[in-house]
Structures are given as C-alpha cells and as structure tokens.
Length: 58
Image (cartoon, rainbow, N blue to C red; front, side, top):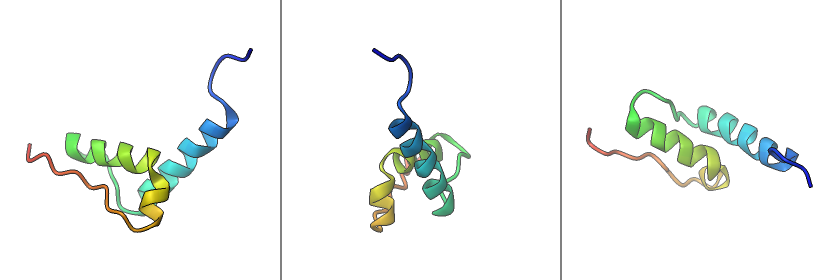
C-alpha cells in the first residue's frame, strides 16, 4: 500500500489552481480564500460557468 498523494489527486489540484486563477479567483481575504478553495476543488463547475464567489461580509 502506498502512502501520500496520488498522481490523479495531484493533477486535479494543479488543474484546479490554474482554472481558479484564470477565472479571477484570488486570495486577498477569508472570503476570497474560501472562494479560491471551492473553485480549486470544484473546477469542472467553474468551467461550466458556475460562479463560486463567496461573500461573507467580513
């Protein structure tokens, strides 16, 4: 049994970071960090046009 992160998971995260950055998700405050993380892990939804921008009002 292998320990650590799989190649597929690593590729998913890298593609997610690229998609999130290319669609304007940044890390400026907690709300934008949350939006970035959602976009990074759910990047197929971002490519389909779903906005994952979160506004917590803080």
